[in-house]
Image (cartoon, rainbow, N blue to C red; front, side, top):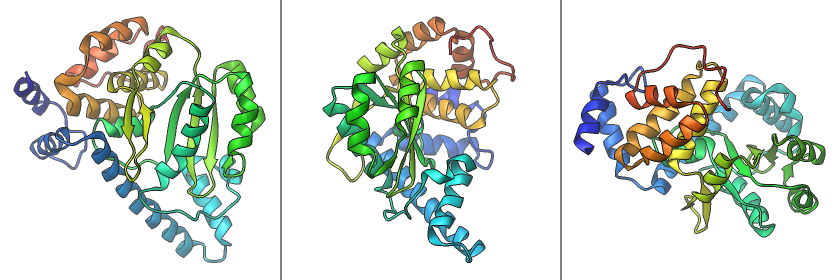
Length: 295
């Protein structure tokens, strides 16, 4: 089955336009043999280099700005100008440990409060696929109103975290964002809506140790990352190149280890069955999307 999957994958379009199918197959085969921690380490090192380079470019282009203004400018370019004021300190921690340093305090608070959570998005996607740069963290957390006071008190010194935004996110079962001041890593926390799919994902978390640490954190399973990314891809009218590449990268690296039964079951429940079938074939559908999808 593995040889068959590799043969089929060779017929698919490459994930990167500047990479030949043969070279990409060798890359995928290489990362299939690595542990999630190794894949994350490669990504964190790549992201660290890119971030240091970006900060140096901002300093060269805007030498008249104070260090904090330069940092706010870069943060605004990354996450939107309206978020620039969420940064009130110059970053003091650079390097591959930036993302673990931003994640671990939040995880410790959630676990201390007994809040079920998982890290999804690009971090979990990278753990199960190929390295790429990322500067933000997506988390799903089953937070309730009784958790807010202790959560804010524990994190407000080192993070931008707005109480009103947290309360609104819980009331609406939406999301709020945080900024780690020492690293300027952005964290988006999605409050669980309590859907059966959310409950299934929280029950299937996989503990993995972050690079440079000895502490496991809960990552969404590879199947749940694929399903969530399919949902976001559908919500965005099927035009996001990076979401599609992430989906294909996970499918190709994980190959036959994926639970196809679970994928098919929840894709049908979420009205994403046709999109999942296309993704499994490696055939990107035309933009437009399914208005009936449960996303």
